Amino acid sequence: MLKRKLAGIIAVMCMINFPVSVVGKADMQNLQYVQDNSVEISVFPENQANWAYFNYENVHEGDNGNAEADCQLGMFVLIADESGIDEQELQNAVLCEEIQELSPETVSIFLEDTDKGNRYFEVNIPDVNRITENGTEYIQGNAVRSNGIYSPELRKYISGNEHVKDVVWISCETTGTIEWNNDFTAKNIGIDEPPLNNAILTGYEESVSALNALKNELTGYAMLEKANETAAELQKANEENCYSVTANVKMTVAINSTDCQVKSAEEVAGDANMDNIVNAIDAAVILSESAKFGSTGKHLLTREEFAAADMNNDNIVNALDAAMVLEKSAKTGSGIK
Image (cartoon, one colour):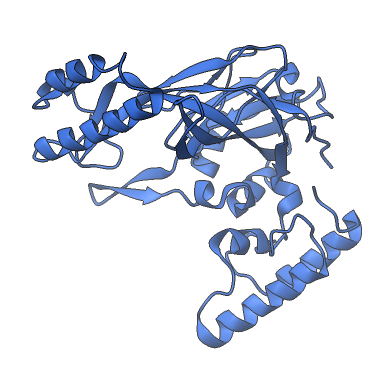
């Protein structure tokens, strides 16, 4: 069972628009990150580890007039033996994109039992996939990303690869300060289309100039509100060319002690009620799901709960899965952290 450092981890980084987390050491200064709303960027300066998922919410005005927000950060890390992984095989199995190897020293920040004989890989799993059928390309939601660490696809990949030991999800929460970053990002219709050239936007240059003229008059929160209002105005004025205009931001994450949570794909398997314990209660929940679906065709469990309950990864939750949960509970002493 993996041991992890849960308390006293220092969160040092965060960005926007997609779910996540970053951790670091107490002697580091406040760090600033730029997000241009067209790409996901997050760099952990101390060791250059990238954190693929990030989000901020609940933006509010702080005591000093700054715009503050709750920040969620996180990433998937695959643990393999010294032989490593076949990146193409991994990409096909879990529908991922970027894969970056991390040093054991980097991973030791949040996992206590790092082994120099192991190799660690950050895995970026996108929200959507492009699928081509009969010459037509479609956008489809990525079930692996939706189900996260509970995904049967992750468990299948782990069990089918002798060199892969586990996949873990690392996340934490902190707070940050948000500022308008002097620009906007415009996108045309299409969920994954690249951003438009801002030069084609009617009123773009005038809007940026007007906002810059207000910088010495407005607080950070008022400036961000004004930038968001301007983005909405630009979008309306250019609705024939684009469907989305967003204000770019810079986020500064304050260093404060927080808990870093680590979940293992192997350990969460069977946790049907998602209480971080795999035991007879989960087996009962699984049997209830099976009975309800069998009699009504409707699910009792949410998508994540169903993925966790599907112990044998066959996309069916039934008595066989319940039996496997009981067996696992007996072997592990019923506890996962």
